[in-house]
Length: 189
Image 1 (cartoon, rainbow, N blue to C red):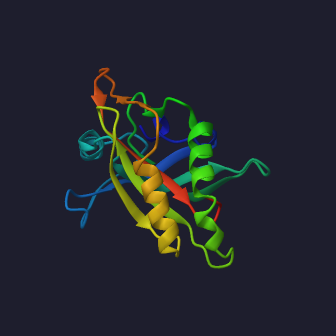
Image 2: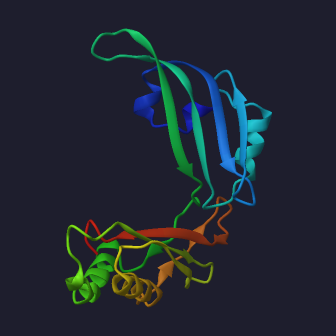
């Protein structure tokens, strides 16, 4: 049901669900696949959409609800919108730890980012895949920081991350590829 997927704090104050839609992009990423229902229990079409999703696939749950207002104890109509991504049972992890990965990226980008002006830099985004073999692959710039030199430096740093990765595992304990995203730029490299 929807209640199984949304944050517990939200499910506690929602008394009823109606006009619930599960949506995802089609294989071509050009068309939406959508299925509607009038309560919190997924119908056959909604379950088919959810079961068809692979690790890294994104989907949304939207709809109308009746929600208890904590301050006034009144029930009001509201809209819910949740964007979610299917994750493996055990996500990929950098063996040396997240703090060490961030330290590597910050230390090795210090010189490059000196060209950036705080009022001009934009939030950059890089995607990459930790493959079943533990290697990084498919490193792509999704959004530019507004500085080509910074974008190129960050792409190279991601491609050249030292150390090893603990690969992602699915619910059967099998190794699977996992897509990850790295944001940089406006909040600092």
